[in-house]
Amino acid sequence: MKKQAILVSVIAIALLVSACSGSKKQSDVVELKFMYWGSLVEKTEVEKSVAAYNKLNEGKIRVVPQHVPDDYSNKLASMIAGGTAPDIAYLSSGLSSTYAKEGKILFVQDLLGDDLSFLDSVLPDAQWKVNGKVAYFSTAMETLMITYNKDIFDQHNIKYPPSRFEEALKWDDFVSLCQSVTFDKNGNNAKSPNFDPNNIVTYGLSVSTYLNHLLQLVYSAGGTVLNAAGTDTAIDTPAWINTMNKVNDLIYKYHVVPSPSVADTLAAEAMLTGQIAMTFDGNWSLLDYQDQGLNVGCAVFPNLGLGPFTMSAPGVTAIFSTTKYPQEAWDFYKYSLDAEKGPTDLFKKGLWQPIYFEYYTDPAKISFWVDNPAHPPEYRDVVIANINRNIVPLPASYIYRWGDVTQLLTPAIEAIFGAPGDAGPILKGAQATITSSKAFKGRFDL
Image (cartoon, rainbow, N blue to C red; front, top):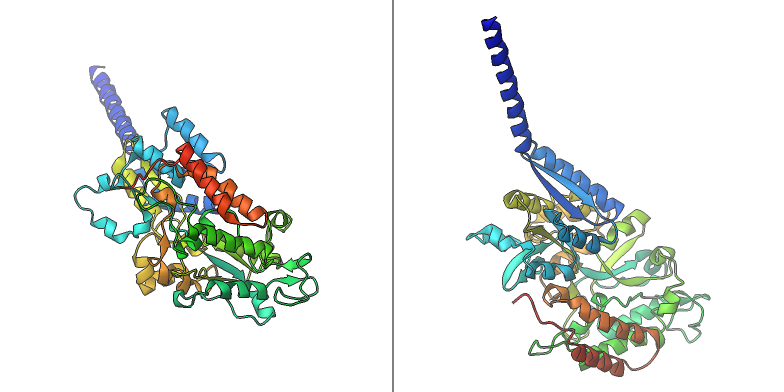
């Protein structure tokens, strides 16, 4: 009986040790919460890449993706306030600096320690600095460009807009091109003396009041967002006024851009239906165009004096300071930005552009993400050749609480688009309002 009791005890202890051992092994798996937004297409690709990462790190790290398709910023703020912030998350460009300044973000530069050589591999415009230190990276590069319906140009035997930086159209030539591909119901283009501006079936160009679509024109004309001292915005300068007057003329003088009231009546897929020939756009639209089967091309913006400019207008990905696993979070962070290991199809399908130099310099790596149906042949000239050339800095990447400024500036842009007239008084009034309201809170990058 004594021997049996001893044997039972030994077995019990062995089972306990075994159970504890299994429990410990399970607890050794680091679990990271990753919160992100995006369409169903993006959700599918992100989930696929996360699953691949989890398999690669089985028994060590497990990432739990949390897709939030709407009201993202408010839901994230509630989680932070409730002490349940994710380990890693997408952040809007405007909100990211606020969280960084409040100490809610782990700075990438701190995670790198003394060896900052990793930063040399990342495009400068993808590195976001707060108080002179790199805090986080763009989720992807997302540059602006002109996209156009090649079928409209082919049908009328009109030369495509240029894709090469050196061949960018001067403004008057660009207006002429817009006129050539604007048609009324009788087939007359906007250059014809018989053109009927009241019965347009195809507009040469679509331009939204989204400020980022207009800033590259302002910069090309010699304008900037800030005054020379960096103490306030400067949207009432001759460069701004002349540029906005040119846009107003496209709508009301040349009739090649739909007014806001007309634009509201156009089909959601106006490029596909032939109602729009060209549009100021971003590379992210290529994914939709591919799905729609549009014969799309891309081109550089016109040259208003200083050459064609572009802009990268992405959100960012950040690691929250409340994470218990900063090194594991950093490992997944790098993976999520990798065009070949992370959400590969989001790069190949046109939604994203890599943030690393090598994908714009190494022929094999360029081909990896560019040579596919989502990227038209001109894409190499428009993007690859110009990724570090005349890029306008996204205001939200260096101006604190830029959203407060745009709330005051956007109504002025909408007024300029809304009726014929001089943009000068409107912009001067907007600048006075911004100054008096003290909406400009300075830079956060320096």
